[in-house]
Length: 179
Image (tube, one colour):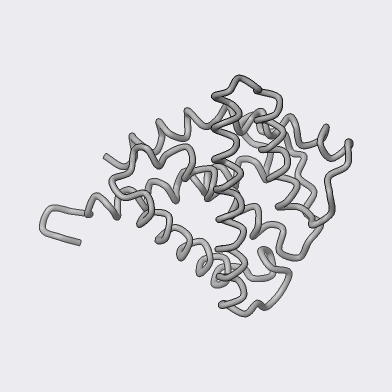
């Protein structure tokens, strides 16, 4: 901390983390109208979903950050160390090697960010259904390594639409908190 309070970077990291954690808690507890439809099948599904939430916040808020890559790196570190330190049973199904968790998180984060990039292009192209399908596919990836069935797509569609509708409010919340 400097003479005049938190640095802008620290404010942005803190704000982004609060938005990320709010998204995670809201969608895993069915709060604020979020459909409670996630079906975590893997030992680390909750961790994968936490990384998905990180990618979602980055996609929604990066335009308001001075250095989005630096914020993303700090958030990724916070998410990995927090999940390992807070409750490895909840996020990984038991003890986990920190380096393996970090590697997995980095891989999944890059995958999600590439999919969000495709989402933006497709949504701008006017194919809303295909864009929503990308979000539903990311949600399924956080749950399982199996290919999504039609039932999975139907089940996750409503949450994907809810998340899409929350992107603007996430961006506004971040902007207000990062001031």
